[in-house]
Image 1: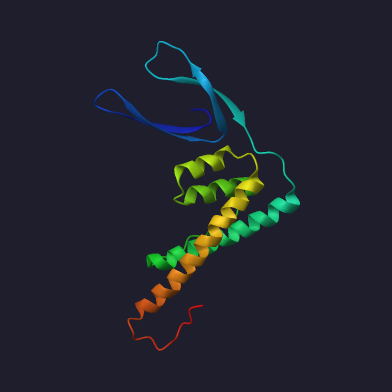
Image 2: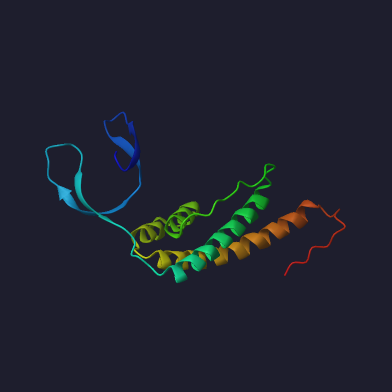
Length: 160
């Protein structure tokens, strides 16, 4: 595959599971009739629109900050002993795809994100999702920290 990678698994009945990872987005325009046992599609490639960096960059910073907070809270909740991996910031469009892929969002929502041609729109929707997630996860992490003291902690942790 020239634009990514793929893996195939042939099943006993002759069918196959095919997993692909692409580097560009495309829209399926239609199928081509062939004598082959598999479908061949006609696709068109698309990219995001050019957008105002004065809006895009601060929005991406906000999303990255909230995503980092979610990752820290989730790490605290997991009781992992190893330190949280460094999360590098990337350019806004890639950030929007990485953050949406990191969450267990409904398939329909992920599809909508992939189909959007506005990075700003994608980041704004992610910001709303992250805002809800970060509050819940940070509160859960505080409660978990209190619970781990098993009543023997001398510090009182204020829950807001």
